[in-house]
Image 1: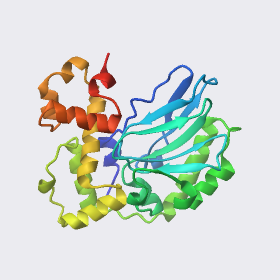
Image 2: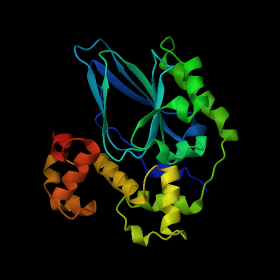
Image 3: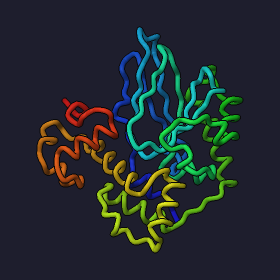
Image 4: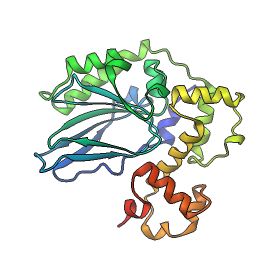
Amino acid sequence: MDVSFIRQLYIPVQPTVKSYGTVSYQEFLPHQQLHSFIYCYWQLKTNQKLDNPFTYRVVADGCIDIFFELNQPQENFVMGFCKKYTEFDLAEEFNYVGIRFLPSMFPQLFGVNASSISNKAAELKEVVPLAAAFIQSHLGANLNINIIISLLNEFFLDLLPSANFQNDTRLYHAIALIMKNYGVVDMTEIDTGLSHRQLRRLFDFYIGDSMKTFSKVVRFQNILRAKPSTQSLRQNKLFFDSGFFDQSHFIKDFKHFYGVTPSKAFGR
């Protein structure tokens, strides 16, 4: 099954990541042949030494990321699917590079059970030793970002022919339905020809959590992309369009995935 639809239907965003003047964040496209697997490469770095340590908040986006500090590439990690926001306490100076995989693609490329790394950052050498060794031996602070992207592209392009893809059409039919409906779906109405237990097993392995949790993250991400104003947040229509019964449920779920209330996140 052609899985390029995931990139077409789903754009994972990290709205709390933006340039702060002293801290900058950028995303870079991978090689064209990698677009179905990798959403982006990213770099988060200080432009000058900060007065205080930096807290970096990552919102739930349904993706799995590899990341490492360019000054210490031997220390590299993978962040699994997270069902809530995560905060990282960073130093006064840092230069992180990451690879953000589209939903289900990290397990497809590496044959790793996504649920084994859910809701945590694990040492990459314990999960994908090959990728950890490549980062440690080939990347470092002496290289500019364009060279780093080129080397990462080369690594993943070389990996593709040996990857054992299991594109189960029933799993991807369910993922497509969730994405096309912006995460607002009735779980009982998704008919894939699989039992609930079988589908749960596939979502655990390729996504890292249940179909219901993944749908909630997709719904949350689509609200972020809509960038509602503080004024529109006061109108019930937004909650009902997004599948919430009332404002309190909306605020509770949003804060769970983002870390702050909607009015604070979208305050103009």
